[in-house]
Length: 230
Ligand code: ATP
Ligand code: MG
Image (cartoon, rainbow, N blue to C red; front, side, top):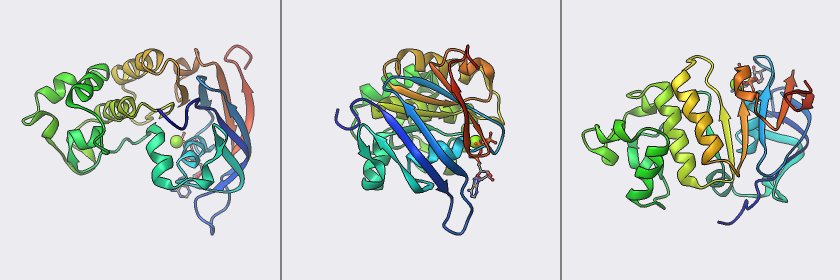
């Protein structure tokens, strides 16, 4: 496994915006996500939580300041390189039009056995086994033949197969799905035990056992601390 080996993410006075013509939505954000830390991000709707994580993928433009992962300025990497090394379970999880296999392992780096193993961990094994063509079944555009919870679990299986050091989870607000949530929590505690995990939390229960909590307010870091200290 090469970069990132540690999963050390440093935001250094990040200012970010969706487009050059739009106002900044993150201001002076400095956060040190230590390797292996479980960090919860919270804050009101519109405070910039999702945007903060999207800067990691350079979906949003960091126009001032920098983000380093294991000492490398992500602004200097190619987008393909950068995005293939990080994994996200988005608020509105998406799937590609293509087979289930393609969705789980777009770079075709894993064996069928590895894919089934990841599906088992994400508790999707039975669902895929019951599809007409198993791993070769087609996913409809956007994944609308699956529920939001199922799509999140597919994103989780994809993250497991990526063997990423850094996982970002953006809890879905619309569908509070207790079953999916329980699986996500369990997998983070086991399969991602050693990895850096950044979780955007809409439920207090999700962040109670974080190592650190970052509270955002209007695009600023308002508070950083342990769950007990806040
Ligand atoms: P929520 O809890 O509702 O998910 P959030 O904390 O994730 O909220 P963001 O989605 O990061 O908030 O939004 C931060 C700011 O960026 C808001 O002012 C929002 O209007 C703006 N914003 C979000 N998405 C876009 C976009 N695609 N284009 C332009 N501005 C956007
Ligand atoms: Mg959001």
